[in-house]
Image 1 (cartoon, rainbow, N blue to C red):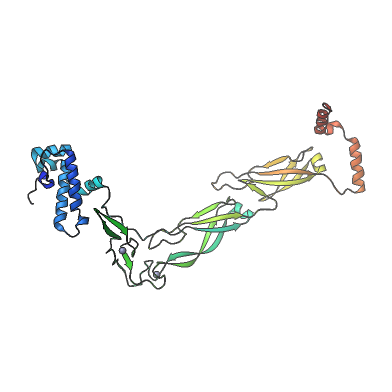
Image 2 (cartoon, helix red, strand yellow):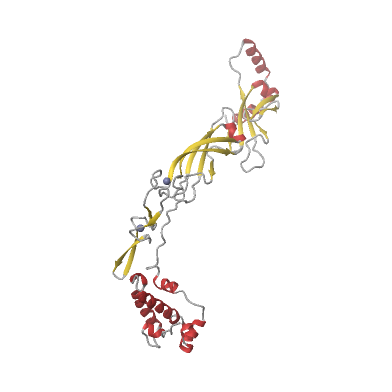
Length: 361
Ligand SMILES: [Zn+2]
Ligand SMILES: [Zn+2]
């Protein structure tokens, strides 16, 4: 191993140089000998390393003290080595740092697909086959974009660095290479099938499971079924937007189902057993004598299943009392008789209302 030069000598400083002087000198020399400004010049590179090593010791109070007392052994005993790259970027930021080469691998696009299903299918769950076009990896070239048997070659413009450097006064400015888009290599002979894109449009058929309990405007995510990634990147996702057709009888809000059920005036007055529709066939509810229009009956657990599992929602039956119309002669006579028999206690609501009116008329 070559004899190490004195750190102060490397920086051209006196032993009693101040911290500030050390910093300033380092800054000047490091910029002067930076490898990016002296490409291919081995001597400069060595000098640059020397400067960084000297500075890494002299800028640190403890290391400098150890170096002053014991020389190189003292300073280097402090730690195994030093990464001068870190020192340099701590000092200058990343003026010279190599911008990362851009990756040509890109994630595939997410896709959206709309599916319309029947009201009942939303409750029971259903499988649907969907067909759509998407980008998939080109098989002749295996998704590389280079003609089968050929390979990508180092970009002739940037020599594989992905960037073009320009000297601008003191600094060199780098720009993304226009030829390779910063990737560092280019396709010399494009695959004739995909014209170098690495992907082609193909039709995809897919059976998707729509779970029981799905609701209108819900969206399903089918991971990885979007477009294939570019040049081996990950695939995008497929989103399936669900539209549930409305139903003539059943209305749904969340996991509950609502039915509006007309009943006759006499059913409401006398009470009855009433057959009501549910999504799983008929059920029977008991209408008590004197039921009013708008009364609500609950069928527990007859609503929609929950996507998350657990108890189903309820079905609610709202009864509407239908006033008789198109009366025949006999019906009319009977109703007139009934009217004569009507008493206050048979219409408590009406009585209470009339009492209220009387109090201010
Ligand atoms: Zn290039
Ligand atoms: Zn191809």
